[in-house]
Each structure stands twice: as C-alpha cells, then as structure tokens.
Length: 436
Image 1 (cartoon, rainbow, N blue to C red):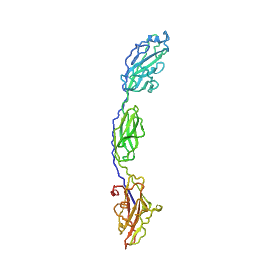
Image 2: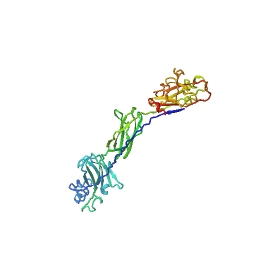
Image 3: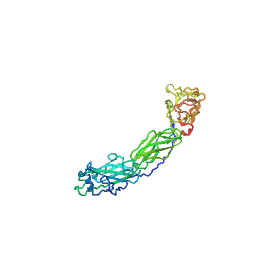
Image 4: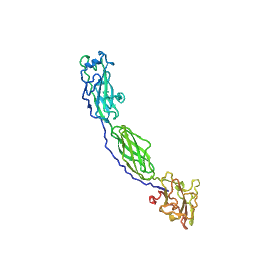
C-alpha cells in the first residue's frame, strides 16, 4: 500500500537594510590658557599654568603669620568655562603629577551651572577617579544637563619642599597645567540592520530578528507586531550589550493569513531611543496534513479464496473494528485543516475489471447502516473521494471506516489476482490534482 500526503510550499523574501555606522571619540584637548591672581590667598581663577611670586601670600598663610593660617595650608582653585550647556558628558583633567598626591593634591572636582559652584557635589572619588596606566589624569562622567563649568580645587602644606621654593622667604613658583579633554554628550540613537523572520505561517510562533548597533553601548529592545487592529508588544525586553547585539523574539501571530507589520524599539546606555521602520510580513495558512491508516489497511485489502460466478464476496477484515481489526483511515490530530480522502487503483485484477471491486464508507460509525454491499461503489483507476461524498471535509481525529466487496465473473480462470491501491489526503477543496 502507498500513502501520499501533500503539503503546499510557500516562498517569501527578506529585505535587508545595512545602515552606515558612526562612532564618536574624545575631541582635541582644550588648553586652559589664562591666569589671574587677584584673590590670593582666598583663591584665584586660573587657566593652564600658575607662575607667580607668592612670597607675601605665603607668609600670610604660614605659621609665621599673625595670626597663622588655621589649617597651615594654602588653597587654590581654578574654574574652567566649557562654553555651553547640555553639550558635554565627560571630562578628562590632566595636571602635573604632584597635583594628584599629598601634599599638592587635587581635593575637589565639580561640574557646575554657574562659576561659583555653590552647592554642587564633589565628583572626586565618585564619578571622577584617577585613570590611565600611570594614574596621571582624572576621568569624570556626569549628566550633560549639570552645567558648563569645571571647578577644580587643591592645596599644599606650608612645609613641603615639593610645592614651594626651598627658601621660604624668596620667590615661590607653583606650576599646574590642566588639559580638559571634552567629549560631546552622546545624542546618537541606535541603528539597525539585517531584519528577518523564520516563518510566514499564520497562527504559529514566528521569531522576529533585528541586529542593533550603537556608537557607545546598547541597553534593550522590544518587538511589536501589527495584528490587523493594533500594535502588540512582546511580553519581555531583549537585554542588549556592547555596541552590536541581536534582538530575536518569538511571538504568535493571528491565525488568519494576511499582511502583518512588525518593528522594534531600542535604546542605548545614554537613553537615546530609536524605532525601526515597519517591516512587512505576509502570512500564509499553515497546512499540516497527516493520516493514520489502520494496520489491516496497511496489510492490504484481501478477499481470500473466492469462487467464479459469486458476488459480494466480503473482504477478510470487513468487520466492525472489533479489537482494532478493520479498514479505516484516521485524520491525525496534528492536522491543521479539513481534508478530503481520495483513493484509486493502478489497474484491473488480471482479466477482471477493477469495477468489480466495490466499497462503502462511513465517518460517524464503524457499524453504519450504509456499510453494506447493496449500493456499494466501484473502485476506479482515477482518484475519487472515498465513499463518493462521505470522507470529505473532515477534521482532525476523525475516522473514515471502509468496507470492500468483490464480484467474480463466471468462467474466471483460477489464479492469484492483485493490483495496487492508493489513498491520498488533500486539503478540502484543493481537488485530486494534488494526488500525484
């Protein structure tokens, strides 16, 4: 016996878009370039370097002063104007190595919205720390909305030879050089490419795939599909990392074959968002057909020994499926569409025409009233629905029960007679042309 099960094949195309990729980096260093000492010893505004005769000021801040400086130190500060707000999110401050460690150390670094920096937090030790292999600069990060001024404050102890001239009563020179490496705030949204899906079947789980890239770092993404009436998001987010990452999410689409749309939303570690274009997905009906013939049918339709000139000889398993013995075809529960069952033979039984073999079918009972020889239908060499109109448009887990009879003409010579019997399951309405 032969079983033929047919599945339609669908073709689909994927549009791939490859956007350009742009990355940002540190800008050219800004050299701090002017100096004023009008406010010594309370403090002074300065840029680039300090080179001044501080003998008088030093004396006033030394133990020899009357009264001496309370903490025995001389403090300095610098305010650097970055020139605009909402532009920078990182600074790098480089200075003479002595300014990093006691006694000449930098003590405060702030980013401020005004020049006096009152009430602003000290970033040193939190978002501002020593960096580089030789620990020779500070890297600081902050919100781009925090301000436009960089404020740096430090001090040294009066007795320290590294910070003052060895002759405390002669000229004293202090040199600090500050270079502020300024990185523009990241305003570049993530980009996407390589959109694809792994299926087009309606009513099934489909994986939606999109590759994201970012100049700084990716954070998360989510898929949304248009189901014909509204956008529906995936239940969870894709967690993205690095500068290139895939968001692959699986969603179940509508059972109705139609044109759908899908897209993804993504953001980066600086909370820049991007929404992909709407990608088209034309779904097709998911067709799966499987039939399960009974073991007796698989073994072949047999009539045993029959005599010439006899009619309605009963096939050996023309029984009411007692103990599972009968001729029947079951539609597998996994089948997704209603089907029509066809059958045929490939020729006559020797000199006996195939029309002498007849059948009846029933889909509601294995002992149906019509399962009798009277009115039985001849087999042919062309595909026809089993039972003429009985085993058609039937759904999953339904049985088609069949019984067969054989008329032997008078004068038939003895011998073994056989032919090949075929059956075929086709989606309802597609016709026997699918049974090839």
